[in-house]
Image 1 (tube, protein in one colour):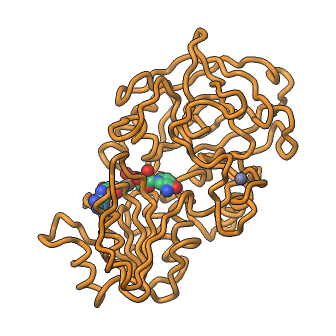
Image 2: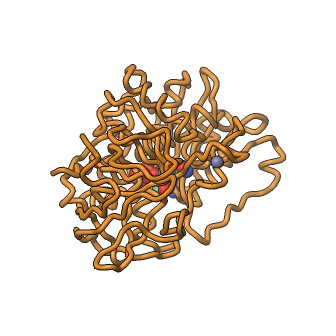
Length: 382
Ligand code: NAD
Ligand code: ZN
């Protein structure tokens, strides 16, 4: 594909616009401005829906910012690049990511962090960093961006630091799910919880993120993987992901952390919370074994949530950690996660339970709201 015909020009294309919180997205013709310095314009081919989109679309406990174009799990092709972009060119296959990597700040230079100073996730910002403005408009009215990606549009503009260049042989309709949820869960286990072989791992929330965390536990050689979810429909699906036991907190009168302590002779070795529920976060921490247990929080809480536990739980040598994007650095690490799929170490097909055309995007929201399936792929060309 050639970029010469559209580079430097405004592109008119279809986008699914959220005009108001909680109201169905509306297919609109939007104008997408050319990329400015250190930005790239992408043609999105596939996108999928993650719970974080739904939270900010509902805006119940979040700062509302509308009209907005949501979407942050996607795969696409570079259409054109702005000034100063040297490591991407038109035609490159890429995954946009909601958190970036400038490669120059203290975080990017640290081996331990992926919380880039310049490009770390900012859910309240609806504009591009370069000029504080949006690249999307409808008849001159600006439409806000979401987490710097806004992939529910045929074309979008993204900071170069939020774009991972991947193997062009990788099928974008599969690896697009690695641009957020699956990498997040997988990395939460492999990079942060780091369970030892033979250990017991609890996973709270058996959505795509939690099942990716379970996949990480299986790859790490965990002997017991205990899945906890309020939705019993999730248990069947979870068996395909190596989850060996299930607990539904609704089936018990006592707190689920007590149920888990009884099942495991005092607590699990590692727990990974992938729900966004503050109660599950507290349970996930309190269910780890004293002396060595590590809990990793992944879910995005509501705005006014507060984490409350007795400090004794921490003094007794339990560790609580959190992670964004599974501690992967988007540009440096994501290409190798794509290679794990290409080498068949990692299976992605089992995460993809639905597929819809772009015009049916609201169906993807319905599936997620009723807890049906894991990931719904939205095909932009259909
Ligand atoms: P999902 O809705 O598909 O799955 C969440 C599951 O949690 C559901 O099955 C639900 O029934 C279950 N659940 C809710 N409350 C529970 C509770 N109290 N106890 C047990 N189970 C409970 O969502 P997902 O796409 O898998 O995302 C999971 C979470 O991860 C979300 O909060 C999302 O915003 C967050 N997330 C975080 C990052 C990050 O970098 N930290 C990245 C992506 C997604
Ligand atoms: Zn940085």
